[in-house]
Image (cartoon, rainbow, N blue to C red; front, side):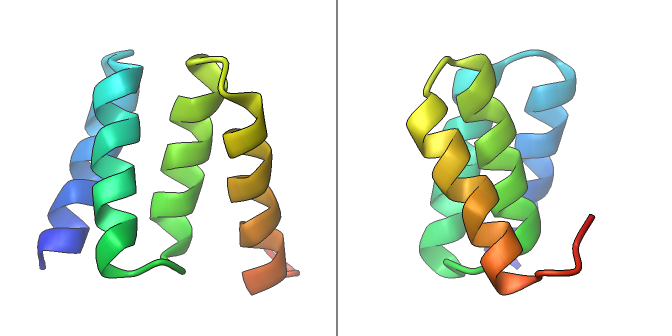
Length: 71
């Protein structure tokens, strides 16, 4: 449950443009479940806006490896 709460709060922070908080929450969620697609996407999005492009790219690549048909 904690992973879900952290991931959802990360999305809320993205909507509020609080990207560092979103990044931190998504990273914490991924500690519970490293392959959680939504958390990877949320951290990737936050990383992009924080100009952490390498992390963003790796997170988005991970999504496509885990779910190749995810558009």
